[in-house]
Length: 394
Image 1 (cartoon, one colour):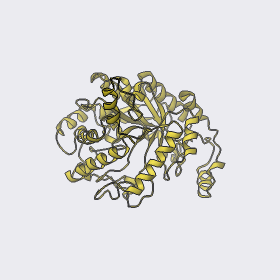
Image 2 (cartoon, one colour; image 1 turned 90 degrees about the horizontal axis):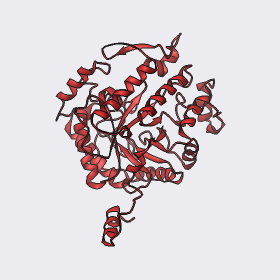
Image 3 (spheres, one colour; image 1 turned 135 degrees about the vertical axis):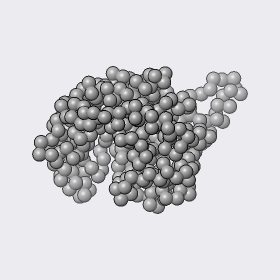
């Protein structure tokens, strides 16, 4: 494939305007994009992307970290000691990207693990803090992303590199997630230049990516598992003008998550009360708007357009009776502020909790049985929750 720089030079020499390059997708984000997350255990095929495209979704936040690779950690090889991309794994990833491109779906490539930061669910349930406490792992992460960007820079499906899903440098060295905003701000300022300085870490990664790929958009999650309040604690935006800033929205987590479904009386929405910002908050549409608004307000203060903010994950348990109301309030808020969004998740192949195509009365056991029998196509996919999302995407 001819490198994009070669094309640009040729056009200039011919006295022509620089051509629009297929892999330069910053323009994709100039209008609100609506999509999904695909964190499947097996690589997605073209039928998956066709089904996603048929919903009206324009993009997928794709993680490869659950896939079985040649080594312990897909593509990385070994998160304990990165030594280069695994060629066989890279070929699998490129095949999935080809399938996405064939169906017109753009992809943001999103690792759950980096060197020294193995995903908790693949690390014996323990949060891997090494990347925030040992400089050699940050060096390895920089090299990993330089290698990966070099390998994917010309792929027309790639609309972004999401450096790391849900980083949390604060977890073992900072304030609690629900601390007052001033505590989050003070702690973040004190980390400048240190290993737990997330913006500083991102700046190193971005510089490495830009050495091999000057144009592909880059997506960065805020700290504390992509909490918008942790993003709002950053003293400034990153220097690269092709960066998208992502947050995740599951608050109030005590109500939207699986443990709530095991309560004798599950928490309701609106009305659920949780600890928040050093106090207690009763969650309703105004509380949702204020929490999400922390990211957009920060962007405005940094003179960033709202189209640089992404609700990269949000969701609730499909069998929770208030899920539809909650999804609607989240969507209304993000769209009113002019951001992009991606719901969690589309046809995840090992968990049915947030598969909104499934009807709310479908018991989890039916999903697992049909999946284990290799007959997922027999699952009913007429869930009313998915219609809420389809109506927004089309």
